[in-house]
Image (cartoon, rainbow, N blue to C red; front, side):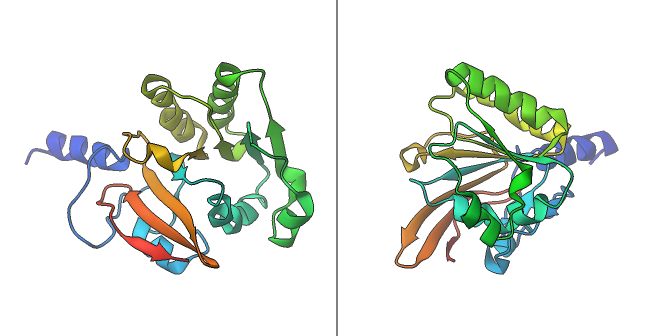
Length: 203
């Protein structure tokens, strides 16, 4: 294989556009942030991918997976942006989980287009450690801009979407389906950076 071909393949792996077969997590070279759940980290390649887009498919239960990482990120001198959240984040509950609420930035636009624009700008700005977005509707063409913006801003971007969209294709580097199972969460890894999905976990 030529050096140029190998470089092209490595770039596709880093972007999450090419997967490597095998059961062990593939190392992509992308920086990761530990999730706070050892079995989840093992299943997704080491942790949440920084400078990338993550998609959590759930009906309201996915945020708890992010809280340990948000606590860590809130110690940076950057914002945790919540765009079009369906409810007002409860500051005392976040504080109990270690999140510095002074770093929380709430954004709500007039409509879906404005929220999408705000999400892209926040991801790209370099001023946000994480941007979480609850889109009403988002086309594949518009969604393609978000991973590039997250990479440019070295930001963890998270889309919260309905489980009804589980069969829809996605540009996210990591895609998880999350649902309650008793007092735990059942997590189905649909896609992970540079590797196969398919694993199911109880956390």
